[in-house]
Length: 283
Length: 225
Image (tube, rainbow over all chains, first blue to last red; front, top):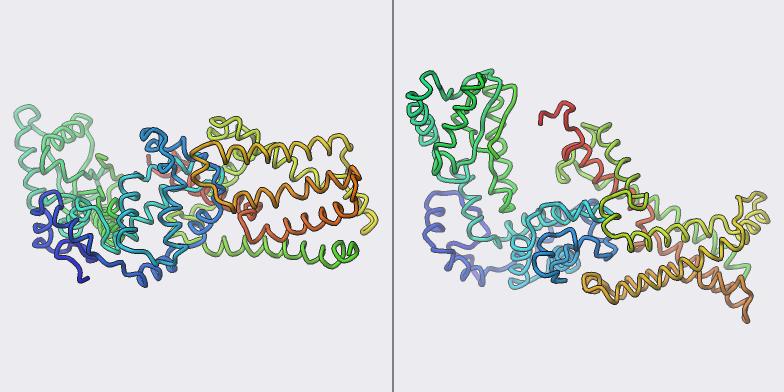
C-alpha cells in the first residue's frame, strides 16, 4: 500500500506537513492511514543488524525469565499485576519477537509494538535496577521506539512533537523572534518592581546560560519573568541564548534519533558561541 | 565406555566450555559501542571501573541490593542453589581423589555430610524453582520449555551424582549417567542461557559502568550537578 498523506515513514520537515497533522483532530485520519502502512521488513532487519549489538542482544538472550522485574514496574503494579505488563514479557513479545523473526512482522504486529513501547513503558529504567543481570528494559524500549519511528509507527502527538523540533528547534512553534520578543516583554513588565532587572540575551562568558521548555514563552511567559527575578535578586551573571534556548526533546520520546541529535547540537552550538561557565535548564 | 567418557570426551567438554566462555566474553566486549550504548566507557574509565566493581559486588551478596531484599525467598533459593552448584563439584572428595590420581594434586575436600547436604539443597531449590514457575503468574507468562530444560541440565549431575555415591542398584549406570550429565552441562554453558556463568559479570559490569559515569557515579566529581 502506498504511504499515507499524514502517516508515513518520513519525518515531518515542513510547516505545511506539520499543520496538516495538527489539523487532523486527535489523529483520526492519521491512525486510519496507519492501518494501511506497510512494514519495510528488509530495512527493519538491516537497521537491527547495524544497531542492535552485544549489550542489547545479550540482554534479550540471557533473560532468565525470573520475574523479578515485575514488582519494580509501576505499570505492572497499577494495572492489577497483569502478567502482560511484566517488563520482561513486554520486551520479549515485541523486540524479542522481531529479532527472532528477523524483521518479518506485519502491520498489526507493529501497531502492537507501538502500543507497548509508548503506552506500556515510560523508559523509567527502574526494572534495570531490580534485574539481577541489570537488563534495562527502559533502554530496550527506547531502542524499540527508534525502530518504530523509522517505520512510521509512532503516536500522532509525537510525530507532531518531533516535527516541531525539526522545524522550530523547540517542542512548540516558537520562532527565534517570538522568543526574543517574549524575553523583552517580560523584562519590561518587571521594571516597576525591579527597576534594574534585565534578561540578557547572547551575553558571552556569563556564569549561567539558562535554557527552557518552549511551553514557557508560548503559554507561561511569567515563568521566564520569575526566573529572571531570582537571578536578579541573587546577583547572578546570567544569559539566555537567542538560538539553542530550548532543551527539551520530544524527538527523543518519539524515537526520532536524528532530530534528537539536531536538537542537542543546537544547544551545544549556543554553548560554543557564548561560552558560559554552566548551563542550567528548567526541566 | 567409562574410559572414553572420562578421557577424550571429558577433555572435549572442558575444551568446549573454556574456549566457549572465552569466545562469549570476547564477543561481548567487542560488541560494545560507546555511541550506541551511550556510555563513555574509555573517557571515564576509572569511574566506570568503580561502578562496575560496585555493581558486581553488591549483587554477589545475598540481600546486598534492594532487589534481593525485596524478594527474600527468591534470593535464598538463588543463592543456596548457586553456592551448592559451584562448591560441591570443586570440593567434593570423590572428584578430588580422581584429580589426585590423574594429575597428582588435589584441593581441600568437603566432609561427606556437608557435600550431601549441599547436593540435596541444590535438588530441593530446583524443585522450588519449578514450583515457582508453575504457580506465580508473572513468572508463568515468561516461562517456556527451554527454561525447564535448563533446570534439568543443571540438576541432573546432582541427582545422578547422589545416586552414584550411594551405590544404589545399577551403580555403573548412574556413574556413567553422572559423567555424561556433567559433560552435557559443560558443553551447554557457552551455547545457552547458562552462559550467564560469565555473562552475568559482563552485563553487571556494563550497567555498573553506566551508573558509575553518567547515572550518578560522578556526582560532585567534575560533572556539575
